[in-house]
Length: 501
Ligand code: ADP
Image (tube, rainbow, N blue to C red; front, side, top):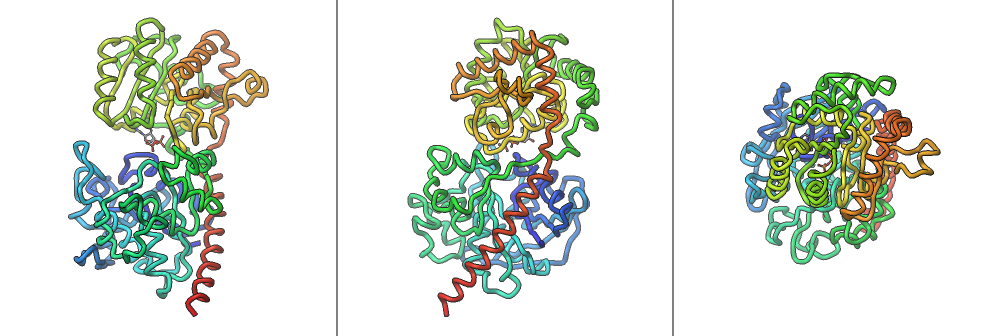
């Protein structure tokens, strides 16, 4: 199949979260299955400075944005395994220090920037030679791609065969803008109604994507169920219930070329399932030194990495740390960037308990790798988690995950209950409900086992390390969805043609 993946982030060119990792790895896995895959993303300043050669293509386009005509051009670079990445160059929109927001404020013209990007995607389907089977649009930034395809391009030569799959990576970011931004889209006001693009008087780009796509996916089966209900549907549960028959949950995979303790260039002791004890001990020592913690091989060390936002459960972490740090012999290492109140909370705690808690507020891939390798346990108490990647990295690195039973965390971590341990299935610790007491209970179970039962601990570690969460499995599921989308698209197209006749 010929596939174009449209995304507002693709690692290593641009990244604020898991979407960037998905759009780097999924195309490679699809290519391995014999598909012709390209990626399209904005030419942000960081993308042009990613250290990869970027070439002009000579392909340019003009599109209407409100009452203006705006020009753009396509640049070309390549990602892993020679996957072509087309960067949409429009310096006024994308040559900025950040992707979406600066100093805690969204860019005021975000709607316009991504209306333009979506139009650029549609134009690119033609400029890149046409004949695409699938355009795979991701998140609200690409929400207009399915709408433009259906409402403006469907009957145009070269577009007839193209079906659209839309993937939700996180329901809580919806791209909601005031109603006058409808004018920027160039679409008829008749689509501004509660069944299509409107959401309580405002324009909702995520909803638009959900309504017009042929098939919808999200990043875990459990999250696919959760978002059809409140509160996880974040107000769009009704739309999702309507579209439940075309909604699928496909777990993200791990890029094991990047996240594998056997070959990881960022860690001092490489290891696999046979020698993880020595390898992890070396990494733990390096981690303790780097973060200024006492080098104590036998103290449990708990790692945390993630955006410092409400979703990730930092309120629970804050409560536990304050209670535990003065009395419990446990070390905590935190790496994150995000909202000021959490930065303040965590830096205050690190200051109060310097031998127990260490925190860095930066985005650092090397540090993330070292934490995954050096920690004994990895804590991910997210309120909700569409898929989550760090718990999957943790499994591979022999770092036992402690997670809230939600979304992809529930789908990928098997709790160390007596039954699961005896059946050799346990890989971590799972708690619910979302409360400090439940988390504390899981932590106590984990620490007791770590201290008192080395044999069972080793079994949990090695069961996790042996699992395969690679992209190959997920890519096969996406392929299936693409096939279904094509069939549905063809049938719907014929039906619409018959109605118009
Ligand atoms: P989300 O997409 O909601 O941020 P995921 O767990 O799916 O959460 O993906 C987060 C990705 O971003 C992981 O690869 C994680 O290691 C990385 N990450 C998050 N914060 C940081 C940070 N401060 N430094 C390095 N990597 C980070």
